[in-house]
Amino acid sequence: MKIAILISGRGSNMVSILDAHRQNKFESNIEIEVIISNKTNAEGIIHAKQMGYPVEIIPHINYNSREDHEREIIKLLEDRNIQLIVLAGYMRILSKYFVSNYQNKILNIHPSLLPSFPGLHAQRQAFEYGVKYTGVTVHFVNEEVDQGIIIMQEVLEIYPAETIEQLTLRMLEVEHHIYPKAIDLICSGKYSINGRILQRND
Ligand code: GAR
Image (cartoon, rainbow, N blue to C red; front, side):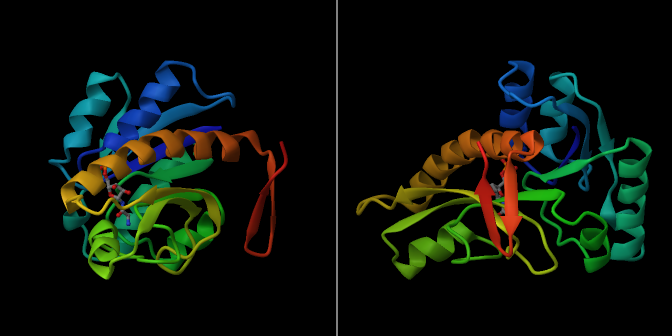
């Protein structure tokens, strides 16, 4: 399975995926073909290069429209025969045009138990709402923001005296562990989808 990882910033989820790949932790046959960043100064670019993975920078600010930028990304994905797109802190909404080209072939990780707290600053949304449990969701990307089919979730308790920064750090650890597992599941093909329900077949 040929994978592209899209980033915009720090890239810690990307690093956890690259680590799993380098340490042969994936059971499926996975090739990480390219890391794509829409930001020239994304910290993740440095990490990906240090780890020996090819990086392409396609800054959205160089394009007149979202469509023009996405067309450039799609061209790259097609040139490299990418079969699965992994969003890892990619902070741009993908257009319907992009998503329809890659139905159930784009994965995203979101720092809440969807469908609660979609969109930006999900940890803060949960924290300020006062929920006692939150979590992490890996899902397919569809036309609506953070509403695609759920692949995996993990729950985190919000401790009474905890700060938002501590919660965010603990959540990130969970993200780093769940995302490679979810990618492995999708690449293995050992699942079926019925309506919104994804069921594991292993
Ligand atoms: C992660 O916490 C990820 O869940 C979140 O951005 C962070 C990226 O960190 N994504 C979203 O909020 C998407 N809506 P990273 O660049 O270190 O992987």
